[in-house]
Amino acid sequence: MARTLPDILRCDWPVEETTPPPATAQALERAAAILRHGGLVAIPTETVYGLAADALDAEAVAGIFRAKGRPASNPLIVHVSDAAMARSLAASWPAAAAAIAARFWPGPVTVVVPRGPRIPDIVTAGGPTVALRCPDHRLARRLIETAGTPLAAPSANRSEAVSPTTAHHVLAGLGDRVALILDGGPCGQGIESTVVDCTTVPPRILRPGPLSRAAIEAVVGGSVEWLAAADSGTDHAVRSPGQQPRHYAPRTPLELSAEAARRGAELLDSGSRVGLVTTAVDDPATRALASRRELVVVPMPNDPAAYARLLYATLHALDQRALDRIVVATPPDTEAWQAVRDRLVRAATPPL
Ligand code: TXA
Ligand code: MG
Image 1: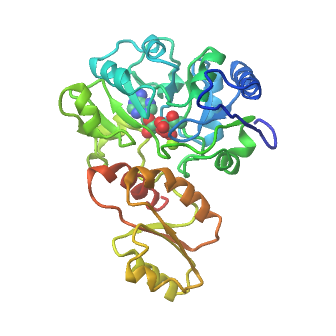
Image 2: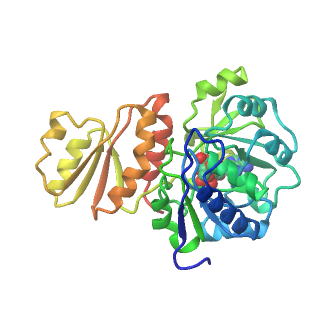
Image 3: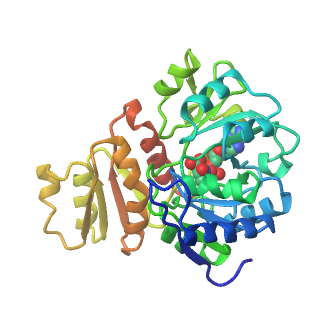
């Protein structure tokens, strides 16, 4: 394993500058050198922080699985600096992947395509497909270019735990297992990319994310299906091995409630310390709890994208508060909230 504590390098890069300032360029050089030598670097993306290794180096990728405690059956996303690099890693480039990449890359969407021969087995968990994504984050793309290789990068958290949206979340979760963390500030999207299987016609969404089904349908010119957790039979497990029932979970037990304030009151009455995550802060039922000392109320935005941006940071913060329970008000059952609901339902699933 790496060392006791990693270096966190702040990587400023003003939007109006096309090249990074010297300190950031130096940090990228250092990160690239670690990656070229088979090491691990935590990197910012627009979705969540990733734990990166050279995707073409099977030994290096094995380090990712060890650091995360990730089952070898769960394949990784390979990050590329542009669509040309993606195509060079695919055995073929389905029309849906081409359309999605052309319209939405760089961006928070991953395409699953037939795997080319350069990708080691360990990256795809031995499967015939590879997941590819071009992140909408200049530091990530510049690092890929500087290292001269695509980067395998899952979210930079222990397996099943809450994904990191700041460098400090990475430090808290994997600090003893990574040599270097590039700090690019808080992630803009806050939840993981939409994953689209482009090896089937029509394509299928394996994981809901920031990019909506409607947006994908508009560019692929037809319907796109959900591979819903509900049909999680064998086919589901094979198609989307990473979508375990429990995932994204804080250490504090979390539950979803359609009547969160009432449920919060009940838990408080039984002597629990409670974190209440809700968009309904002005509801009388929530207000009635305002004076309860054993309660932390976290007001959340009513807009799903804004909610997603804050979700993991909220869970990380509540995990620091020594609470007995986190109660989250169930978001609306609409497609706009699907990605947030997916994360919350998994976070609320108890450990085996
Ligand atoms: O936004 C993101 O996608 C972040 C950032 C770091 O890019 N990455 C991320 O990686 O969320 P990870 O490893 O936490 O999730 C990858 C998901 C898993 O559900 C995995 O099973 C699925 O993608 N996946 C990877 N390769 C696949 C493949 N060949 N076929 C089907 N699913 C695949
Ligand atoms: Mg993950």
